[in-house]
Length: 237
Image: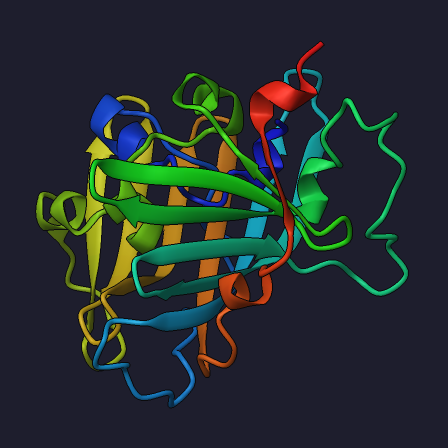
């Protein structure tokens, strides 16, 4: 799977390892406060996550990438889905039924189970759910940690970071971790139990992720009744 589908689920692992996921700062843009959406007493949350990624290549060429993801957390489920611009075909051909649809067209669905987690890719267009085996987690950049999936950065990692004296919205605070690999800063909201912003900086990368809290609305996994269920092994040659 391509890197772009990994919506922050590997951040906590990279923090522990001293590396950083691509989620960080754009110098001129200020912090964005969430909409006035009251926190859900069950811990459910819906958000739009805006990504800005800037890289400097060795050949002197810089690249800027922007994209949005829709995030929903509720009832032991986490759903992440790319927000596609108008005019982008959601049913692009993918070379036959022995291959998965394009990664950007598939939602990532993580469910807490009695013995850990289940991780699935979901195609709305083909009405198909593909369960990923644990041996495939690395390929789709999933670390198997439900808390990391549900919070982007696991709360335990936030607690280990240094608190910054930096302006923040009510109910939130900035945290930072520095290593030889670079710096990561998180604007953590205790109100929503979720980051409102994540900045990272490395020698050749400056990225930023900004979260807008949205009304919860319909839970997307409840719309998958009747979808065909497959395993990732069904797509292996």
